Image 1 (tube, rainbow, N blue to C red):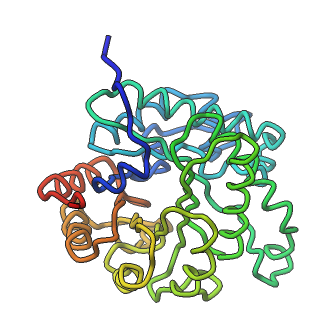
Image 2 (cartoon, one colour):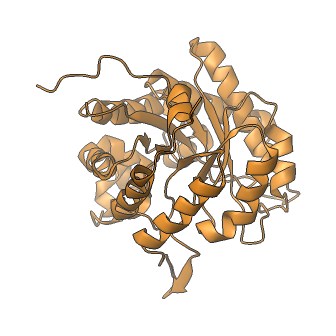
Image 3 (spheres, rainbow, N blue to C red):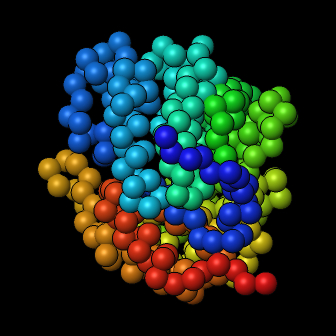
Length: 324
């Protein structure tokens, strides 16, 4: 039997002491199992979060692959598990228990490792609506309904034992605000306070989908009790450089940078990401050298355990801990 770590320092303490490495993409790793409709709950092809019910061994192995590659943190397979999204698959009334199960599975996998502290990050992707928009479909969802959908998700993730909540791949800054509010409400309800990481997703021109730039996005949420602010998805690391530079100079929070493996290229109707693990490690390594507030790195679309192993090597080649 493996010995358990006698004590795991809190996530924010670890963040101050060293660079933390997140994992890589989940969806593309799931596709490697070549899932068929019958592999998903109720034959609902593409319901990746639902695999926690039908193929938990797949999700566990993906988590292990990233931990073996050197990740300090793994994200729960709950990107689309807010109540609005789960309603589409008939699981909306089980949102709390569903997210609790997903989080518990990741916690179970992390408990298998005793070489160093490992952290479980509760992934909270977008609702699919744009509350800031006047779109007749995407802009009409009541704000309270969006907030409540994420509160239930956050509650389940907290009860499942996550070490932090991650708001990711956010296209609308108003929705980011709603999710932050939801996280605080869930923490109050559960009586457990954990860190909140708020991300925005910017295009190659540094704008969110509805035109919000990094300055406006950060200013909007910076005083809402978040602990980390960052960027994920949409582009590769190179395109993120101006926004990361601004955040390093102007913001007061630690920064997360989790890019795709380069800009997506359309090949036969599907997105292909061509940035190699070595190149991604080189660019993010430069970020760590130049921007001292960057304390979390990892990979989004197109990344795999090889990319994470390359980032692990970059981190380990230099001591990035903060000296007093």
